[in-house]
Amino acid sequence: MKSFLRVTVAVAALLLLGAAPAVHAQKPETKTKQKAAKPRKKDEVVTLHVTQNGAALGDIRLVLFEQTPLHKANFLKRAEGKLYNGTTFHRVIPGFMVQGGDPNSKDNDPTNDGMGQPNDPRIPAEIRPELRHKRGAVAAARGGGPAGTPSSHAQFYIVQNPNGTPHLDGAYTVFGQVIQGQEVVDKIAQAPRNEMDRPDQDVKMTVEVDKLKKKKITELYGYQY
Image 1 (cartoon, rainbow, N blue to C red):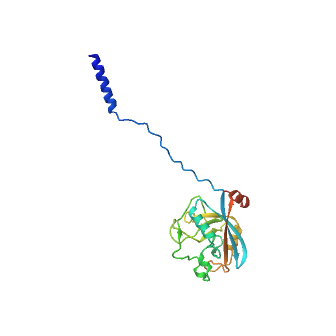
Image 2: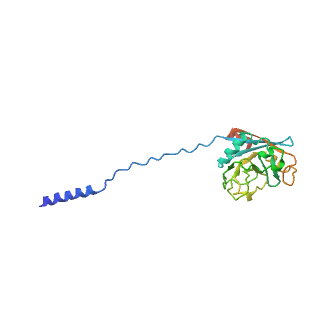
Image 3: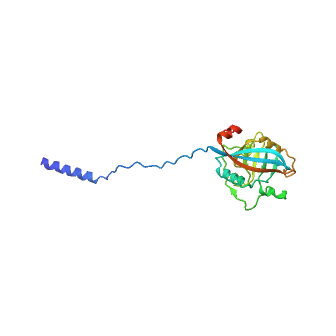
């Protein structure tokens, strides 16, 4: 009798074990590691060669921010494509900013400067809280509308006010910074102008782009990355 009970219990145990769901050892998930993009060792320096009524006024040098990749790529494309050559600073307001880059300013009709074209492309806004309208900030102009309205593909402005223009923070995309030649911006802002803030004598630019090692940029211009 005892042996019968032992066999019965053993069979029941086997049945219970057999009824339990099979548990398989799970293989550890293999996550594909995305390599972080290596920091760029070089950067572009954009130089605006500025003239007033044909006479050299000086050079303004800029760097463009990695945090605003759409605006940086667009500006470099336009600069390297010579779009800006011959355009003017068509709107200058001392104590505020100087604005330029409109291809319309290449023609002989000053009344359309700053108007752009109806079918001009637009760049999605890239407003970053850490990029502010301090002195020498380079920002994208745009048409009317709320913050986040897309930027002009060509027109830009440079902050001339020594105290910056903080009331524009969060409304327009800041995408670069003057690293040399802010005194030339001051000269442009002081140019005699008409009631539309257009200089009486054309203030034109020719733009070139050079790629340098970041260490060299810091060495030459004191800009810290």
